[in-house]
Image (cartoon, rainbow, N blue to C red):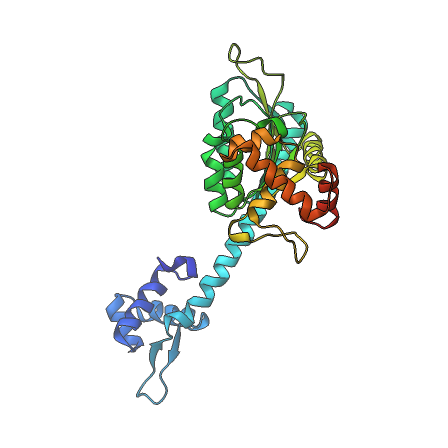
Length: 329
């Protein structure tokens, strides 16, 4: 059992005996372990070299006592664990180099084709379940595999600390239930932005794997065909595409209890007003906002006019300009 700490079978038996007995001489140790004196002496010498035993001072004859296990074995186990960790890192590095070599010689390892909705859904689930650091998402209007409200894997990943950056197509935010769904994700830690149009649906997990369709989806009459893209120049291009869209997208903010981040000190808007403003700047029509939030169109318009008065704006364009200048969003 203690071989991981460097003890052989005889040394372990001898050390356990000394721990139970407290101390022993060479003759007693040999008799208890059914060893010759020479074998017992060799075991004692080996254990002394490892710092496992000490000679009892002032005793009649030479007697030996064990060093406390946490002192004798603890540091050895720590060093052993460090060695194992270094070896594991080396194996991981070698494995990645091996996979990279295979990818260079076999394109099928770079891009895996997913020919069905079931296979695509399974990968959407797997990539989020296995993500450890960050998931980047392009969310377009009109779902292919599942509605955004059914993506429970994101909630679980957010719960274990995975960062999510999601860009929503404006038309998607107008779909029933989406505003509330986005707000719920933001409350759990999702960073959300919106643009008028996204070029493709896409998910990138931990900057190591991307998932996106290969051809335009033709509705329920056909099966979607998608690609799983692993480490390559193509993956780097997809990451760059996401980052470029992220920079030009409009933030969507909604935090509870008026707690707001990335805004200038003294921002006069509360959480609800900031959320409304972010939807307006993202281009969501007032009628859609009213429907999603369960408000009348007149109530939404009244709140918009209130924001315009706070900004000293005559038009919605001026309101957006003022919000950007004052860092309200």
